[in-house]
Length: 359
Image (cartoon, rainbow, N blue to C red; front, side):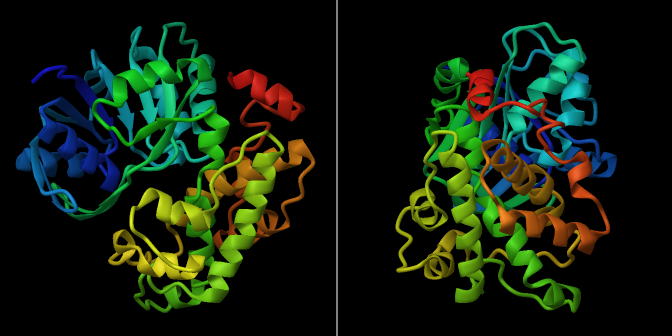
């Protein structure tokens, strides 16, 4: 294969296995890492990953391992597909093994993921030249049928990508666009961060269906959308857009994004577009409120959005309420380890100073 790459995929969940199977089917040399020994042992026995649905492919993975050092050693590209809450710890663990010229891409970074990852590498004393970037969202809408078999419900046509510093973005696109043409360059990692539309959808749907989830009622996460809930999502989205505007960024609205990311989706309002998106049809709601739609999206999505708003003097009452209510619901202070300005090394900086820091 021309331009064959050695690609390490970190995380063997829905997205990680989709990446591994797809990349292997393309002809790249793929290594898949996860810390879950039982999952890795099962995948080793299978030896390949099958994708069905929007992609019907099969890829044989060259290395399936719980050894992080061996997985990333000599890899051209490292695709991180873990939960965003793992980014900081993962950066600290990866730092001793990274080598000059490697690309690390967070899929996705959620909000300020690349900033957190870059800070952690510096904290670990890394001095080598690493290219760090984040995708606005995961390329695939996908769910594991079982280990080694992923149902790819949809593949996004456009996914924004940025490096930190932003001056490295063109290099990342040069390396990654031949593999994934959906990647398009963003202005900087604040643009990819502010384009975190998932943070508008996920915690709100879970929170306002909390009783149904706790009763064990099964429902479709997006297809069972109601006008009232869609209205709450749009109000949260207005806060996101207002904060972004304070940093000179104009992200796409949630209403427009659904049709932008998935061609052919129609509807006169957000509720209809959510209901009419074929990529969303079969996605079921989580069966517990202890789910990543809250435990990930609050600390790595809503909190940094609210914090960036604070730095710019923008009020975010709905974001603040979501953080407080979800913290009470989970009996956990999400602000403690979440992506606050202090935890991101941005406390006391103005919007202009934050922008200068990431260029």
